[in-house]
Amino acid sequence: MSNAPLIRQYLESLRKSEWYAQDQLIDYQRGLLGTLLTHSFDTVPFYRDRLGHMFGKGGKILWDRWGDIPLLTKQDIRDNAEALTSTAVPENHGKVYDRSTSGSTSEPVAFKQTELHFIARNCLTVRFQEWHGLNCEQKFAEIRPYPSGQASYPEGESLETWASEGLIPEQPGPYVKLNISTPIEQQVDWLCRQGPTYLQTFPTNARAIAEYVGKHPKSKPQLLGLFSISETVNDETRDICRMHLGHDIMDIYSASETGNMAIQCPQHAHYHVSGEAVLLEILDDTGTPCPPNTPGQLIATPFYNFAMPLIRYALNDIVETGNPCPCGRGLPVLNRIFGRTRNMFLFPGKMQVQPDFKTVTWLKYLSPKQWQVAQTGPLEIEIRLVVGERAAEDMDFDGMTAYIHQLLRDDITVRYLLVDEIPCLASGKYEDYVCELKA
Figure 1 (cartoon, rainbow, N blue to C red):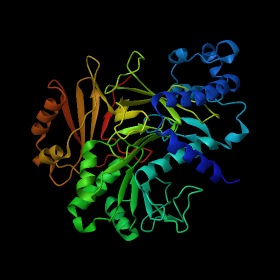
Figure 2 (cartoon, rainbow, N blue to C red; figure 1 turned 120 degrees about the vertical axis):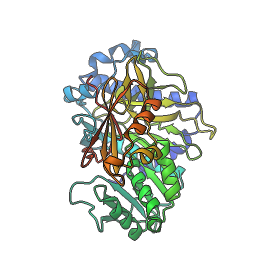
Figure 3 (cartoon, rainbow, N blue to C red; figure 1 turned 90 degrees about the vertical axis):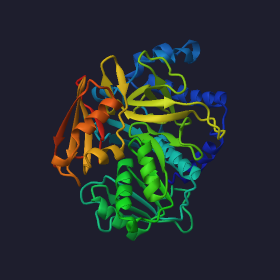
Figure 4 (cartoon, rainbow, N blue to C red; figure 1 turned 45 degrees about the vertical axis):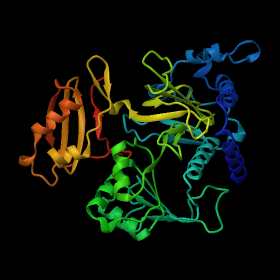
């Protein structure tokens, strides 16, 4: 049975709900949350005790008690997979799929999701495409991890269309894919030969492509749009891509477990929360909601996964909420997405820092081919370097150390380690910064 009618119906609903006032959106969310809570209490053993306090006389939901629901952790999912699985998934939610995370930050998390959850996620991606003016008749390229031997250079892989079911035009643009393990020079060659209108890839990969094009300007692919997924996008990456590829990055903020959580506004740099499909809470260390312009821990509750509901799920991400957007959309705003707590440095006094060493500084002092900064102790930083254009004996380690002391704090011990390579994670991502402090 085709899902096209449902996709079209939900998309039409999204085009209206994005303009809801705050009170309208809260009512919309509580309608979906109420159904999810009742289903979870009735059919998911794990929530039997956790959600009992949420129901009053006649099953009325007591929303003022929402903050008393314990947070759900990744370890909870690993330890309680069976108890978190619904014993009676509604038939109209479609098939149930087994999925898992990439295990980027620790061992993978296995979970289940419904077909309806995927439909909602797909429609939110279509909304992002509509906001940013993508044309489904144009060619779309994606460079991301694929199993070994799939989407391999020199040809990659080609599909007839990237358009969502129910929205396929009479002359659909093809969808071409390449494995992200392909060397950057070959990725650029593939893009020039394929000639896509749009490119979607990891931000670190987009930056590597842009930096290569900066050194070889005749190899510049002729793109009309650049889109990123999976990793956090920093301002410098945006600047480099804008300078050498001619386009700013447009970003989707998502996670395997929760789906599409926020998408970049078409008129501004910040993000709009996908409030019709997920409730996001941003909490401080005491569990209190953060005011606008204050970073905090992200807690997510996706509405449409009735196979394994994730209620108040702690993703270990740090984000910053924002004020209402001038564009007029009523969806909540995220100013910045800092990424995983694993990529934040923690110094004595509970001072948490998002490090950001500028490329110009790396070039000035070290000129490495590749680098990674790791916090290995409370006041210890290790710089891992793959030697590039400058020999090790010509690197200015003292200058770089002085820069780090100025940027972070002057009592840090900085060590340098020369390595042959810095391997990517199992997910295909690279981590420029990683906190390796023991919990």
